[in-house]
Length: 472
Image: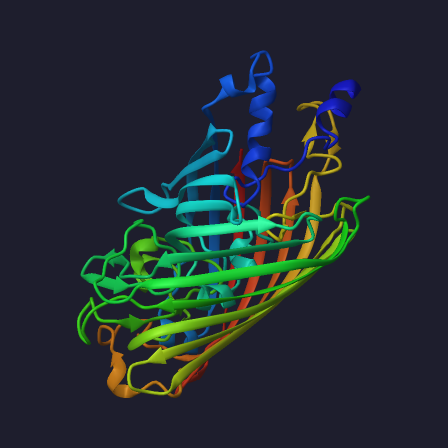
């Protein structure tokens, strides 16, 4: 028994890597290559395919006072699969990679997630990716959804980052592996999310349909670069200091000034936790209600600047970002929407989180020194896995004080929450993460959301969320 434990359970193999992260696909396929080592020629192993995937089962309890219920409605407790994704990854030739990933957690149909092909070792560009993928935006957006420190990315990201779109991207890393950069051109035409009786135009967030339309505008640019100020090579990044930033310009697609095809901007965020039907478009009865919403207003384009700072110090780590978004509304002043977050964590069992040099992000996944397992019903516990305590603060200003009233396209009357629902959000989260092994984790978040609505005031509430996740 002891020899089996020492060979298979002491963490000699690394954590599961998300193949959608730039630079990861070859590492994910290496194990498959080793299984094919009996093939005489490496070229004869191609094309190569491997199945990957994960699911996240979430449960949430909401605690609201009368002010919160009056403003956003009754947020229902519930349990649901937040994400259930299957992915085929592989290599067609030595220099051509691909990914086909679909999500089955959205009601009614599978959703397009990361579906792309890429060519590596291209002169000047280095690597070129074409398809639908996470555009080079904030550090939070490039952190894998499989390996978040909390149940969701920050509200700051949720409010500002266009995120997953169809486009073309080039990315590269310096010879010393200390600096990485990426830039892309992508479509920001009309994308839609629908619910019974509702058609909503999405400016910020996932494009789950893999399609965009529009005759006027809708072509955008995004970029990101980061540098390792310090990286301890001997410990493989157990001690490091990271600095980065980026800029993006989004031309909004659409036509006219009225109706669902109007050229409008909208940022609507949920409180760093979601349970329910993602097609609900903010309707309380369909899931977690939106906590802030600029509403739809006529605009031509928006800009996003962001700065990031992060570090690893043995079992401790931190990550922070500041976002500045400016929206060029129609015939009116620029609308300024700042946001920020800061988070930190400490591994109680002594492990340290990883760092992906090609992507320039912290990877919140570990291989426990001693995985969680026992020796049978009549035996004893041998290990308790890896444990982490984490905390985060998020701040978002979607007050929209200088939006021209004539530019606003109001939402349905008497809806809860209303649209627009302008205000400033402060939110704190305390988290506990428990890794059973490199494939399995359990997470708990206590989220204290403190929205301050324009013309209404404070309407705080709490969320108690848990997640069980399996990946392979």
